[in-house]
Length: 285
Ligand SMILES: Nc1ncnc2c1ncn2[C@@H]1O[C@H](COP(=O)(O)OP(=O)(O)O)[C@@H](O)[C@H]1O
Ligand SMILES: N[C@@H](CCOP(=O)(O)O)C(=O)O
Image (cartoon, rainbow, N blue to C red):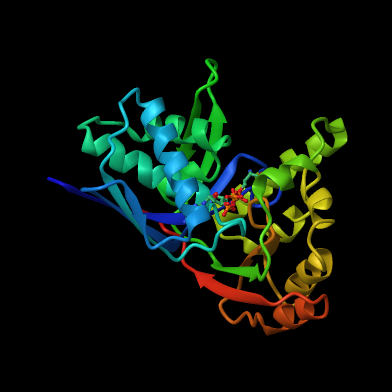
């Protein structure tokens, strides 16, 4: 076979308090294809071509295989880039799956998670794109990235507000302090448990107690004009839960069926930010 194809979902990570741990797979996809022919990338602007080829090179290195000189890559992606929807993780997973199957290397889901996360740097976007649903990422005692897929099969309606500017994850991680107060850590532990209980028991009303992350959101909010006001508006308009999507700048929310997103979109406009609104189903796999 000389054609390899993968369709990979996007993801929203953290869910606020679950920093670097929670990841949720959503039905917005990247499609990637590789054929043997000549080395080139079709369908991408030049700076993104380089980033794809850079990932291709890292993937070959991590699999200890010589990089072929004749792979043609074609990418069709609906995942907005640099918006906090894990586009880089989806791309890494797509390339890793293609390169491993092109070389008849069989990787388990946990092996894929471990390898892709070591390229991406953190596992919370990688894991849901591989396992689907809501995942809990961690490192084992040897420092390998791993993840567990929760057994939650039903989720409230999800909406993502995607602004017209992007924020590089690297930049958004620079503003997060490396040490935290014990009381803040305790607060985050309680919130992550509330999120899980709310989703397991479908008591969505209790999620409102889990929207006050202490580890990263406040610091990142300074990089996003109107973030706090728009998040407040989303909650005041009846959402069960709202948080930064990944490292931002998008905002993710769980909402009731009749939720109207217009108010939040207008609120962001007051800060000069145009936002698109995506209602997305959770991808369960
Ligand atoms: N579809 C894509 N094609 C090429 N490069 C991509 C693509 N998606 C992501 N990337 C690379 O990943 C970077 C964005 O990653 P990141 O800052 O982590 O944001 P995101 O939240 O979208 O994952 C881009 O600048 C680019 O280098
Ligand atoms: N846990 C990471 C997740 C980054 O996700 P992205 O989709 O913004 O790349 C973080 O919060 O930095």
